[in-house]
Length: 193
Image (cartoon, rainbow, N blue to C red):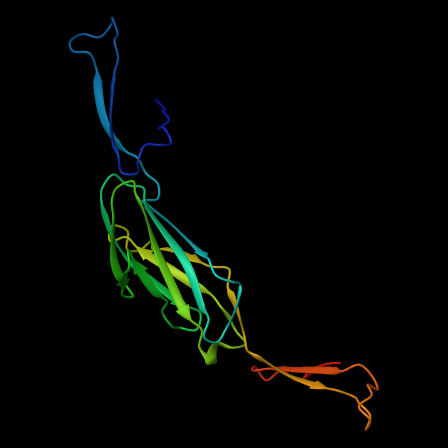
């Protein structure tokens, strides 16, 4: 049994030729030798997603994410990208300023990382929820092992309406502190002093 360690920087999919031979004085004829090729294993793709906008958004705000796809293999890969929100809608994904359709394809050179921009404009129906965004990247060489990453979520708040009650006498004198009452668009009851 011979054990060897492959350096960390050897790309996934690299073919390593392994030849073993032995010398022995007692064997008649040819010296024994054997060859075995070994392919470096591991994940050929790494993905990550990061929200770059505020953790709280309101109707009309744009939530923005950065998606990184790294090709750890020794050959170019064309992968499918899907970016779906927890409300069932798709984020708008752009690569170098060009829209990528849902399940659209992106080509990543061997050993390279590409960065995609994703965005979503918050709709009225999203108010009162927390939106999560899951990107899925599928390698055609490994269709049963798609890579996924979900962001930390964005709270969707509604705009607040404020009512201020001023307590004054007929002569305009302040009788007590003003009361400020707010209500948000989600229908939560008025709150305030």
